[in-house]
Amino acid sequence: MTTEQLPEHVQHNREYWDGMADRWVGAGERAWRGNELTWGIFQIPQAQAPLVPDDVNGLDVIELGCGTGYVSSWLARRGARPVGIDNSEGQLATARRLQQEHGIEFPLLHGNAEEVPYPDESFDLAVSEYGAAIWCDPYRWIPEAARLLRPGGRLAFLGNSVLSMLCAPEDENEKPTDRMLRPQQGMHRFAWEDGGVEFHISHGDMIRLLHANGFEVEDLIELYAPEDATDSYFNYAPAGWSKQWPVEEIWKARKVS
Ligand SMILES: C[S@@+](CC[C@H](N)C(=O)[O-])C[C@H]1O[C@@H](n2cnc3c(N)ncnc32)[C@H](O)[C@@H]1O
Image 1 (cartoon, rainbow, N blue to C red):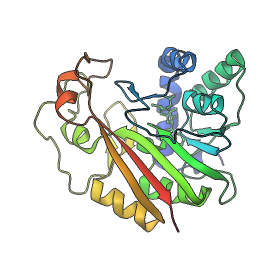
Image 2: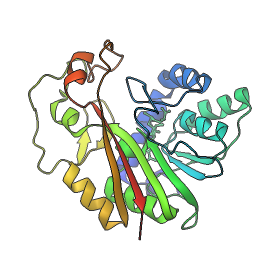
Image 3: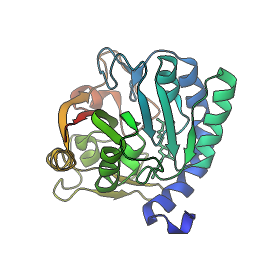
Image 4: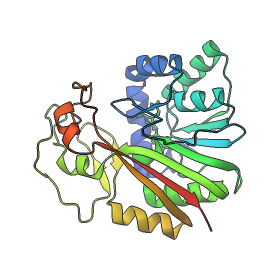
């Protein structure tokens, strides 16, 4: 498929992420070096926020929007067979270099996670850490994840919380306050000025979407900043705010039909 044939938001995000890839090299290198599974801006340990099953040995895993591929690298070290797909060649170049440096190989595909070139029921686990979870249209990528998973397979994804999206200022240099800046009703597509196109839907809409695609919701884990946290690189997630309100959320679902 040529770039011109991709949905408009995927074309836009390809250009955006190819332009951003250099800025994510350092984070990718650090994450590949770390062997611990931690999640989100405040690096919450897997033991506190179990996004993936503790035992992934022998599982076929698709990482939807794998970026630098560090989540797949963690899973591969634990015996899983991951495949990563990402929309940005720039991000995949980093992932490929890190694969060679660490001697951990798994397939990396350049493409849209809303349309993955694998047969139905190829995987046991579909995972996304800020990949498809926020950059793909949920009404496209959730049905695609359902198609890719075997019966009983698991879907796990992490992204910004609904509350954080309602309070995030348009200007990325400003921090959120305790004021909601936009309505929850109808929330779906977020096109940030000078940024990418993201997707965030309400909890009720997400539950209905998951059910409609044969998933049973197993958990919704809301992530807060730990008590000793200080501000991070991300302006939209100041530590003070994130200790009071969930700044990120993990969804876990199982394919039951
Ligand atoms: C914040 S990164 C997160 C990925 C990974 N966890 C990491 O930290 O490297 C977001 C990634 O989503 C990818 N992405 C955006 N839209 C996508 C799409 N439609 N299909 C696949 N990947 C997409 C971007 O190219 C980018 O690499």
